[in-house]
Structure formats: C-alpha cells, structure tokens
Image (cartoon, rainbow, N blue to C red):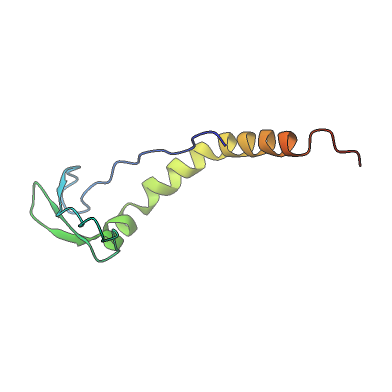
Length: 87
C-alpha cells in the first residue's frame, strides 16, 4: 500500500508554541500515553495523551483532508487483489 503517513504539528494549548522537550524512551521502552512533554516556551508539562487530546481538532482535520486519498489507495489495492477474478 502507498505511504499514507502524515505529520501533524502539535501546539501547546496554553501558549501555542510548537516546540516540546521530552526524554527519549529507552531501547526496550515504548512511547506510552504517560510520557511527558514540556512546552519549550511556557514550561507547561503534558502527558502524550493530554497533548494529543488538546490537538484533536488538528489531527481530525488532517485525517479528513486525507480521506479521499485513503479511499483512492484502498480502491486500487482492492482492484489489484481481485484482478482476474470472475464473479
């Protein structure tokens, strides 16, 4: 399937800054919802879950913008998968 990844810039809900600091997880650690991010401007700390929740509108808008492309790629994949089948 084509690469349908997109980056959505997250902003601090307090000051609007787009830069955050966070400790990198170790090799054996996953990025959990409890991982803390600190705004580089105002110093407010957010868990990953809180930061994503505060930016839900932007994330949803990015998904909505990609909706047509996602459907197009899925249709191509289905055509390719069923090519040569007789119904």
